[in-house]
Length: 92
Image 1 (tube, rainbow, N blue to C red):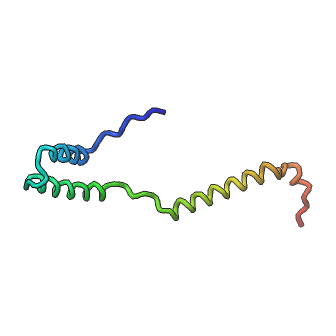
Image 2 (cartoon, helix red, strand yellow; image 1 turned 60 degrees about the vertical axis):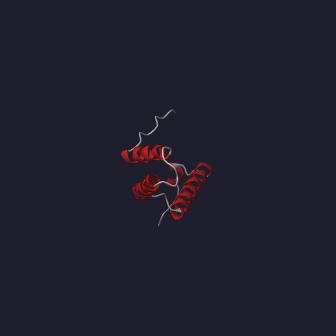
Image 3 (cartoon, rainbow, N blue to C red; image 1 turned 180 degrees about the vertical axis):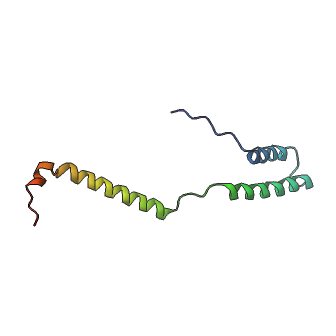
């Protein structure tokens, strides 16, 4: 029910550190520009490392499969075929 927050990676901690460091510099300073360049590079790396989300096609396929399973289960609960009834069926 209660989950512990995921610990931040070293990359995330470095991004946080750089964001805090920005407060110590004026936006027109060269240090500020240097930090912003580093942040852009780290953000690119972070984006590349993040897992890709599930494609919409996969989500639709999963939903259709689940709907089919539900339909089969509903049909079986309404139209029960007893094991003894099958013994009366004559096959050639």
